[in-house]
Length: 305
Image (cartoon, rainbow, N blue to C red; front, side):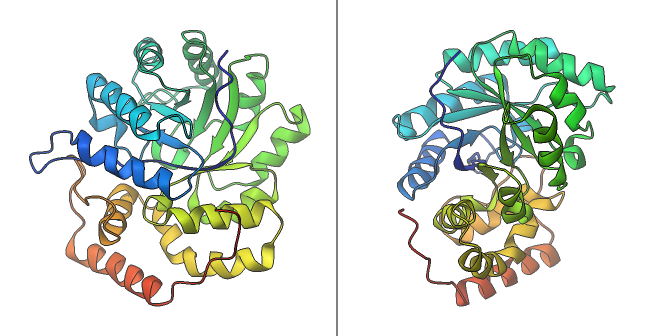
């Protein structure tokens, strides 16, 4: 199994950039990724939810992995999200992203199908067997409906290539439940922006972040403060950040995050249908949040960035 991934720190769920005709803009995506790495993120997740995975062809996903590998230039690990309808299709994509140079995989449960727990576990096992890349199990029941419970994850403890668990359920006690059963068998990652500090407090050592696309330095600083137990400093930054972090929990999180990214001049707000631009009322709400945040932007404590 590949040992190239340091599973710790902030891994932005990188946005995918499009041209006005909704075709893939690899040059703009390369620039987005280069700027994130420049600003100190610890890793990259390509083709996640925020990267609009389910709106991409397999060929586009492969090209995005190749683009990320070039932009990162070996400085941080590149993790490829995989979200497919069947275990067989997910296995094919896993093999392809390994060929493209991905350092690891973030695997979602099979899409659309409402699986029973043993079926969800078998899906992860099947794809893990198709590649020797280290795998992050991705749980996001509000979006993908199938809940990867602690019991399901614990049942996968004998699968060596499944090394990491990203939870976006918002239930931080799940990290404790997993550790109580299997100790440190799995690396734990926060997956929902607005419970980051709580997640770190109960054992998360990494964060797949949406809003760090717009505020990478602030995200990495917040994570490092929490990880170091500097909670008084972390809380001041967390309270400033929280109204924006809540956007990560909305059904239209991709549009919201890309709009924030565009306001920061770090990327485009354009999403590929079926995701459409935010209605005026929602866009104005996000713009108001950003205006307030930028008018009160805090001085960041030194965390070694």
